[in-house]
Length: 153
Image (cartoon, rainbow, N blue to C red):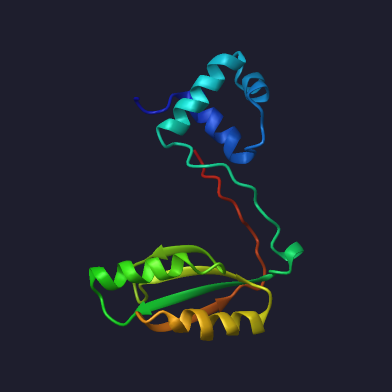
């Protein structure tokens, strides 16, 4: 497949804003019949332009209102330690995002917790059991002003 054409990009924009749109609704918005829109969406999925469809859950409604960005510095830098860290982090339910970053820290985690006590328990009992961590630095979110997984295309 060559790169997406303008209609494909329009479909990606629409689905990025609202993945609940039906094929019929998408077809109406891009002025095509449902059958070619269905084929385009399936092709975009098959070629990796659409990774998956998600629902954005309101964490506060579920009493997970504390968002923390946790910077991690590893004890050592080698391939096996980095891979082991990622493997360990994948099993921690509180961690919703993990990025390998450059700069003073090696990884950035986005963590949801119920409250400060929950986060403290997470740091001491879960992160504390990850042997490859040298140090951590936590930044607590006071207000979430923008939360979007949609990219500007």
